[in-house]
Length: 215
Image 1 (tube, rainbow, N blue to C red):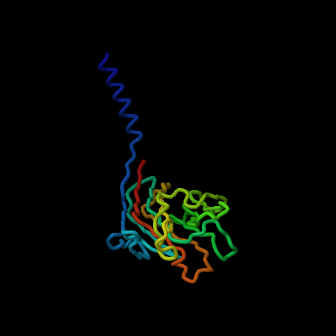
Image 2 (spheres, rainbow, N blue to C red):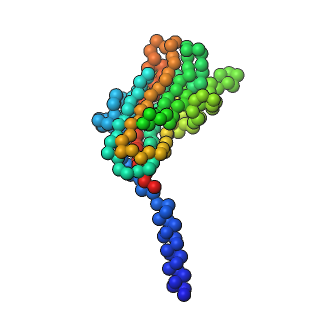
Image 3 (cartoon, rainbow, N blue to C red):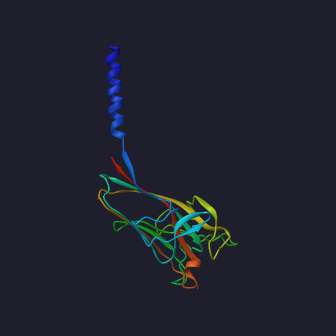
């Protein structure tokens, strides 16, 4: 009887565990230390802070096009997003300066639509807000909220300034079962007061990873 009970317990445990098992498979990774893959369009790279990044971009972006994906129910997309120099977050100076938005689109659907702010708080204690980690508009968070590293050096307009670049670790898990995937990353930067827009505000990507998950 004791052996029978132990057997039944073992069967129950194994059965419950098997229902929780998920099968995930990495289908794409790029740290951009070598030439970017052919799956990426507009694949410009440069060195930032000792590593090679995809970018920098301003008023542009890139596409990642994957095909022949194995059977899956979910896709997990993760990457490092660097926000360089004078991003103004939610500021809206009537077409003059801000808001400054970054977007991630997958198969035509918008999954990130957030503003980012690298601005310092003023003497009154007011901090120009950003929407991230929420989507824009209708969200006001302090500058650099959700950052993995808020003290990286700027690149051009804020070159050498600690805090001139902010790093965000982005991970999105979405329902997806198609054999192909198109990921598009873009910005919407308003900076009509800047003589050199890319020097004023830009962004870059590193460690881009895509996993498929079959529940």
